Length: 303
Image (cartoon, rainbow, N blue to C red):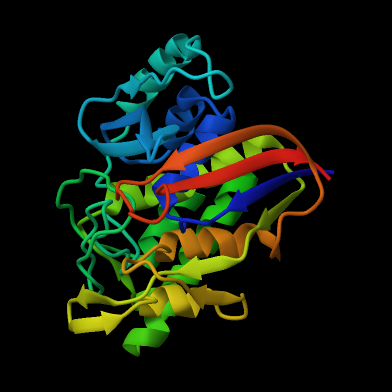
């Protein structure tokens, strides 16, 4: 059985997930082409080789503007023959006028630089530069994805991930999932993280996703309504039923997007199973942590 194992020893976020999948071999041109199927307007995706505590991996980022894939040079991730496919995707992407407007009503301003509608403005291990765009409701985001030409698998999983976040936000803020709005800041990177994660997992053809024991940081984050202890409310809500412990890092390690991706795809949580690894990839976060490399390790292999 072909499996994907996420080793979240330094947490997980949406952009770290995409970076790790890219480092496993998912081509940037594939991600750009699929994302261009949404009505998102012009955007610029970049995949760069960076190090955290001497561990090298892929740092994924996206922002509104002229579309261009930055190549990242490594052995097993993707060959530079993606240029032709990128040109194809580039033309297609420009046919769309979108307003990348949605980070989960709460995807905190961690180092994605997210500040969200009614959640914390804080910095975590991931950053995407983004512009202010009109807020969108959960229903609008769902419609955006479902009316696209994305594969049935990506449509189903991406909408399910947004549903998990919307349900968590609705419960926390005393409203309904339909009424939850995803904030203007971080909109493009939020949907890019979620859709690209689904595209990447489908592209790898895995039959199951295993996840390590989850460890969150401790301390406080600054929210729109004041200081709140880590784990963030939405993260804790999304991970309900999944074992979670706190470690010694005084920063948030798991974001709502990362939590929702794990909750949606994770079939087993705990120690790494006995498997024959085929490829190993690293998704790089923004923060430089004192106790560990700020990377997400992903292992592709056979049980």
